[in-house]
Image (cartoon, rainbow, N blue to C red; front, side):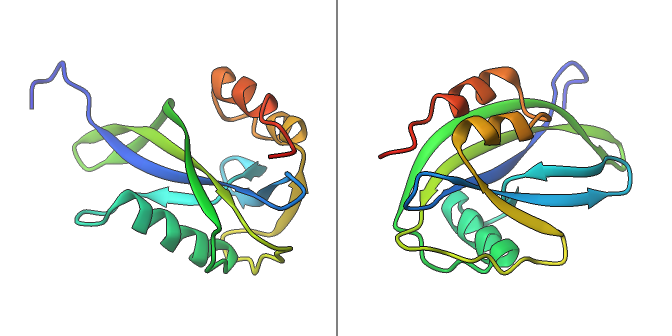
Length: 145
């Protein structure tokens, strides 16, 4: 690789939207970042598709097996860096809007300590680690779809 080129990992994230138009946020307690809100997701593994990874992460993190619809929502080049043996890599998020057909009660993985359903505006106010352009688009997501 040319030393001027940058490498990135792809993370897939899910905006889980219920039938009231509210979005599911998960609370984590990270040793270096304290408590913060996030959305389900993880990094793409070699040989796996984006949608297979998205579905696996959703099931692992919140126990959801059935998604009514999945829509591409946003691609984000983040400021996050992930340490590697020979330096670090950047992180790109591919975010999908996922509608669940009926009321859903998450079953949290060990990664998370709490969950809540928020309006898009409230969710944008909680997801402060994301870029401003994404948060603006999230604020403008309509509750009724």
